[in-house]
Image 1 (tube, one colour):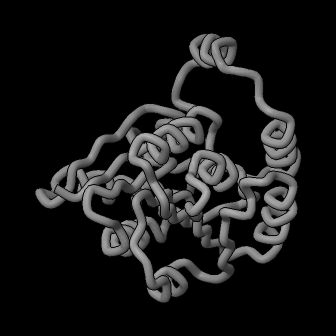
Image 2 (cartoon, rainbow, N blue to C red; image 1 turned 120 degrees about the vertical axis):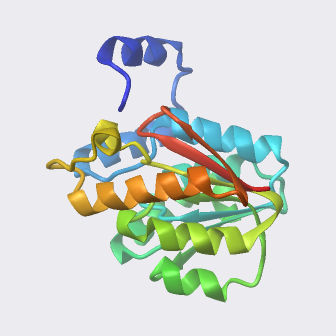
Length: 212
């Protein structure tokens, strides 16, 4: 979280009550130290998906299915979220949560290394969300750009890493390798004439990427 505690508390007071299943997923993630996107980031994702009338969404790194579920809830009846997850335990837990919500049937979980599974997908996507291992971010972004429909958008989480990216130094939570990778990626996207890039201090730093 980049915001100070006072602002974070204020935003929390403005937030609507969590529905029971999402609250349970948040509690599970906190108890088991599973990294999931923040509530505000997930809400932004759902709003973007609804606003662009997305029918196909790709998620690279699903963890317990927290963002996948919220995305699936705003898709039309024929919509689909394709979630790529390398950890078999996380995929199984996600499936368990998703089965408890009617929208869960719109999520297809694909196990394996996203660098390999994404190239086998035979469809284009309106929206891509990246929240996986940070060292792989440059490859994921390249693959996501190739998978986008015209005017599609990529959303990338953790691009500020609690301020570590601005400082250029890792810590106990973010490795130096991860920080260096994201520093380079942010600069690359900011300077790339082929894309529009906006980096927002939301959650732990959310980037929006769209081909020009």
